[in-house]
Length: 150
Image (cartoon, rainbow, N blue to C red; front, side, top):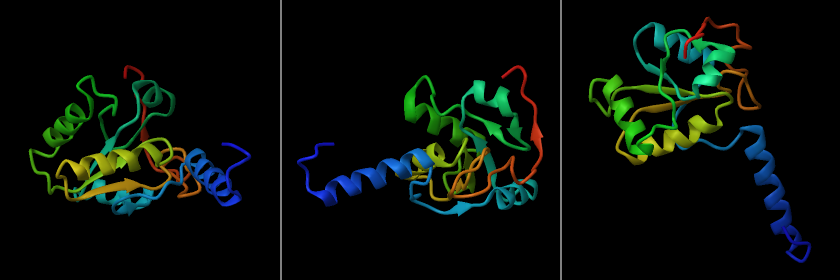
């Protein structure tokens, strides 16, 4: 960021950087709170997918009922999308809720899945740890399953 840039450009850059660091980027599709995701997962209305890394799963545990699919798939975004598709029985219209640490990465992955033809993808606001976008799974005291061998 150059000091010779117009002030409005510098301000916009600072705002964008702040939102990125806070995990508050706007999502491109529908959202759920952690409590809503928990209720819909328990009732079978949605497939909850934790897209974090195995190290993160070991650190905090995994949201009860969540399927673990590391977003860093060896075959890239297509491999990740194929894994999600397998979890929902090949139905790109099946409701899927994505959860990460704060809701930032899941927002990006939500867009990637929507771009690949999925039609019903939710981002869990606040993720596991919480952010300005939502309290998150852990702060809402929702059940977590340990994952010591992830």
